[in-house]
Every structure is written in structure tokens, then in C-alpha cells.
Image 1 (cartoon, helix red, strand yellow):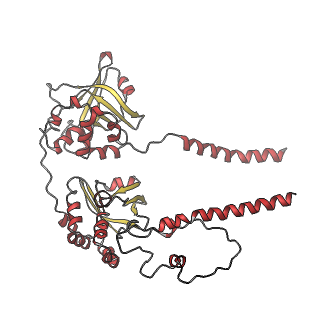
Image 2 (cartoon, rainbow, N blue to C red; image 1 turned 90 degrees about the vertical axis):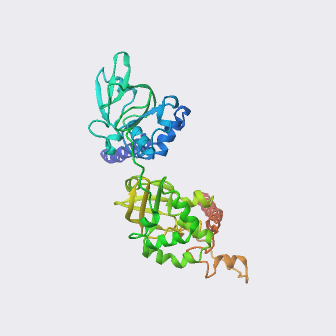
Length: 424
């Protein structure tokens, strides 16, 4: 009895750990949110949604934590959609609608006829003097809640809370307000950014050789250069990486050369902070401009190092050449090789090893197609073909899976029969 009790006591910690793991696995988690996706469910916010996208403010909102967005319906947008403001000014006005704190309908109703000042993304931008980047939130008699910029003139009318659109407690909230918040500081004219000379940016340290490859490919250069003023992240291999890859690059077709250069460019602006805090696939200009194939890669970070994994190989970000919205340029340690042009790493393709059975004598047939598949020619290296075609190796490896399963089933049947015989 004492031994049994001791064993039960020893088992309790293990049971407790198991229960904690199950609780953690089933607990709701927030992996960030997509403001465009949330507003995209509601047609009445299509114009507000469009401006968030055009000003690149949507990306900043998605990367933030503990945030409240004050959305405005199409019919209440006023001069914001009339072409009266530059894109830079519109961004500042929209920044007033992003409160750097969490407010849902319940929290607004709990203000108890009091006012509170909340900071906005306009305050964070550095363009808001004094209190111009703060919004006063006030609850009035009867439960009415209003928002007004702290330094707004007396003639400016406050906007009213209409309804809650979506929220996740203490993380994010999207609320509808009656009209656009007004602020002379936010509505001030913003000078357009100076034009970016992409060749000049790349011709500096790290990217000179890659700049030369782009200059020699008119199609790739035109596509990348035409994207830089909207949103672009370019991963340029350092000069040593370009030199090491040149023997393979020279053997590619013209179409493949264009594709692999565009493979180094993502049609979105990714700050270093975003790359370090987010994981997932990055879409490239190769997949959106010249091909219907995937042409993506995974981005991950560990110990402050960002790594790009193409499944053919990995490359680390070595330095930041430029990080200024809408253009980011990062120097990477290796040339990025897409799986669409080169063979993926063997560890990614190899099937599970099959149990060894009795060896059978094989009759070798001279010049058979099986021998040709088993012994690739010298010009078909593990690094991939020299033409712009997708490798079928993955499909060939996958085709071996049924044979492996069949062998496992046969072994399992033999073991079962043996067990029955012994039991008899």
C-alpha cells in the first residue's frame, strides 16, 4: 500500500504538467490582426480601408499591439476622399484615428461622464506639436461618447462613437465614429518625398555587384524600379555572394535570370523590426510579375539575426542598406536560390527510411531508364538545372512514398502473423 501511494504521489507532477500543456494548447491566442481584412468584411468602410492601404498605415497598425482604430464610413469621409490633401497629409489625418490604447464599447461606457486623453499614432510620428497628437474621449449624459483632438479649435465639432465593429479584449479594437477627426496640425501640407535613385542606393557598400546584374536586365530593373516608390523590400546579396554564384547565374536562361533577380524583391515594405518579430512566407516580384509559380521564401529570426529560407538554402541579413518607408534594402550573405529553379535540400525531400528486408539479386539491364534515373548525368548537379524549368525531383521522391508504405504494411503483417503463431 505504501509503495502504491508513493507511485501515485510521483505521478501527480506529471499529470499537472500534462494539464498545463493542454490548457496552453487550448487557450485562445492572438497572432496579430489584419485591419484591412477586418474592414474588408464591411462595404461601408471601403474608402477608409483603401486609404489605409495607400498610405501604408495599415502595416503599422497590424504590427502594433494594444490599439484602437476609429473607422469612418464612406458617406462620412468628407474632404478626405475629394483630392484636397496629399497622400502624406492623409496619412497624418488617419494617424489621429489610431489610438495607442485599448478601448471597446464597454470601456467607453465606463468613463462615467469623465474625459480622458489618449495618444495616437500622429503623436508618435513626431509631426504633432504639443498636445495635437492626443484625442480627448468623453462620455456625456445618456451614454453618448465623443472624440476630439486636444488642441482642436473651438469651432471644430467632436465626432461621435457609433458602434463597435470588432475587438479582441486588451489587444485590439475597431470602432466606428461619425466623421473624420479634424486637426490643423494633421491637415498641414506635407512635402512629397524626394525621388529615390535605386541605382545610387544599391551602388553604395555591399550591393555594387547586384546593382550591375540589375542594370544589365532591363525587364527586372524596370519592374523593381517601378515598385520602389509604392512599397518595396529588396534583399541584395553582398558582392562576395554574387561572385560565388556567378558560375550558376551565367548558365541560366534569360527568363530564369530575370526571375531570380525579381526573387530578391518583395512588393511590400518590411522594416527590420517587422522581419524580426514576424514569421511566415514573403511573396516576391518573381511570383507576381513574371511567373505563376510560387517563388516565395520563409523569413524567421533567432538571436537578433533574420534568416531567409528558400528550401534550397538559407541566407542571413548582414546589414541594413536603407530602411525608410516605402523602401527597405538589406544586404544578405548568400544569393537566394528559388526551388523553382534549383533542387531543394535533400533533407526536405528524402522519404522516411524503409526497414531493410532480405536482399534480392537484381538483374541489371543495360541502358534502362531506371539506371538513368538512379545515376544523374554530370551536368545535372545537386544545385539544380541550368534552364528555366521546374524540377520534377520532388514529385519523383513523393512517388516513392507508396512503396515505402507498402513495405511497412508487409512488415507489420509478418509481425502480426508471428504473434498469432506464438499465441497458438
